[in-house]
Structures are given as C-alpha cells and as structure tokens.
Length: 415
Image (cartoon, rainbow, N blue to C red):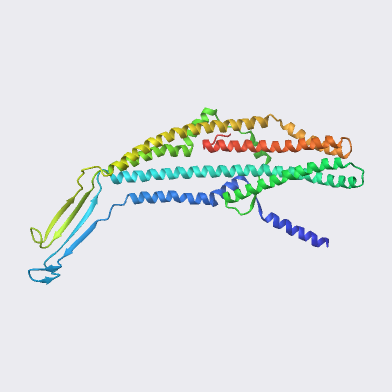
C-alpha cells in the first residue's frame, strides 16, 4: 500500500512540474523575440511599406489601339482591311516631379512603420520585464504565506483539540482562526495574481508552460541597487533623442510635408506622348505621326487636397509640441516614482530585514516554550505578515518603476 501511495505521489509531482519551466529573464526575452505573435505580425507592416515603395515606382502602362475598315462605301466591301487600317501607341509622362514625390512619401511611410514597430517592441518588452518582476515577488510572497499558513494550521488544529477538551478558551481559538483566515485570503489573492501574470507571460513568450522566474540573489540585488546615469534633465534629453513614439511624431511632420509636396505636384498636367500609323486616311499614305496631348490647366484639379495637406502639417506640428511636453512630464514623473520607491526601500538596512526573520524565528521558539502570551504572539504575527508583504512589494515596485523609466528613455540608463 505504501509503495502504491509513493508511486501516485511521484507521478502527480511529475505531472505538476511538467507544466512548469524555469526561465531567466534573458530566456524569456529570447522566447519573446522568437515567438511573440504581435511582434511577428507587426513586422509585416514594414514589408507592406516596402511594397508601397515598389508600387510608387511603377509607371502607367503604355496604351496601344488600332482600327480597321468596317465598310468601304466606294467598293461596297465590308472589312476592307487591306486598304484602310491604322494603329497608335501612347505613354503617360509624369510632369512636375509626381513620381519622385510619391516615392519620397512612400519611403517616409516606411520610416514611420519602422518607428511604430520599434515602439511596439519597447512596449511589449517592458511589459514582459514588468510581468517577470511581478512573478518573482508574488511567488516569494506565496512561499512566505504558505510557510506561515502551514505553521498556523498545525497550531490551530492543536488548539482545536484543547478547546474541545475545555483546556483553552474559545476566544483564544477564534483569535488564531482569524489569523488563519487572513493568511488564506492573502494566499487566494496572491494565487490569483500569479495566475494572471502567468497567462500574460504565456502570451508574451509564446510558451504554453507556466514560467518559474530564475533569478539569483546577486542579480536581484544588482537590479535593486542600480541607479540611473545622469540627472533628470539628462534623462529628458535622452528620451527626446531615443523615444520611438516621440520620434514618430517628429517624422510625421516631415511625412506630411512630403505628402503636401506630392499633392501640389498633382496639379501639374501630365503629358501623353505617342506615335500613330495611318495607312490611307491621312494626308499621306502610310503616314507615321507624333502625338502629344496635355490637359489645359484652366484650374487646379487638386487644390482641395493641397489645402488639406497644409492643415495636416500644422496639426502634426502642434501634436509634436504636445508629445514633447508629455514625454518630458512622463520622464519626470517616472523618475520621481522610482526615486520614491528606491529611497523608501533603502531606508531599511539589510540588517533590519535579517533581524525581522531572526525575531520571527525567536518568537516561534519562545511561543512553543510558553515564554510569551498568545496575544503577543498573534500581534507579532500580524505585524510580521504585513511587513514581509510590504518589503516584497517595495522591491517589486523599484524594479517596475525603473523599467517604466527605461521604457520612456529607451536607452541604457541604469548602471
């Protein structure tokens, strides 16, 4: 019977672990680059922009037409092809730099597509890193709560026996039970958070397994203590140089100017150039003629679109000013958020955290020995529970706020 039980437990453990995979942050980023469907789909926008450039370079096809006699009234003959036929070929010649302007506009659109792709890449990678950091500390919270809950459940079971025997008051039992209920509530909330983060990681990495963050204590400390290079003004300058979303709005001004130039050139009439052969109906027999045709520019056929393009330039200039102010404000806010989190955490000394665990173990030992009262014990446990969760939350928020600053500046700023 014991062998069967051991076998069942082993199989269950294998099934549980088979749905999980330990991955470092670098492993997750590699999987993200290789498998993220949003990134893979967005790359086609650049390919489509290349196709637009290709299309812009293509000229209209030459047109060829001809005629043959349908009925000769002199000889009363139908389809007198031998004596009356002709043909002509024409080609549309673009004037006013239309094709050049169209190609330049298409190339500008490709630059915009590339910047949009870069921003999407930054946003999703930042989302990946934030989710990874969330998983690290939610799982640390889970381990801490599970350890406390295991001890308290054992203690509660022992108190239940003594309460039923009348050796311990019901009030003491209920006091312990309230702590267990709070720990269970914490556990449910943490588990729900982990579930949501795991689902997000699966989408971001294209990995169907649950991801177990794999980060060493040394790497964790290196991330926590790292500080941005340069003061706030330097960070703002870096953001204005590197932020793809802001650069997109700047390029959009140039793009709208190219579009306006293209629309303006469409007011220039195009030339139809061709050659014609006529067997018998012209001035000469078998004559070859040069044909030239051009619309009469009595009015500007594209005047409305030109005006619209001018307004688009002004609109994009205002949007760019707004984006600059918005980016600088976001960098300032993100920097201050990071600094607040950093200063709050490092007001705690490493020895303070070690002392907290030392005191926790000492309280458990003294309570088992009967050296402290139940009230003091439960008061300390409640304080310890809250403090541990807050410490993990502070660490997590330092990493997340640093990543949000990275997302805005979009260059290496933490050393």
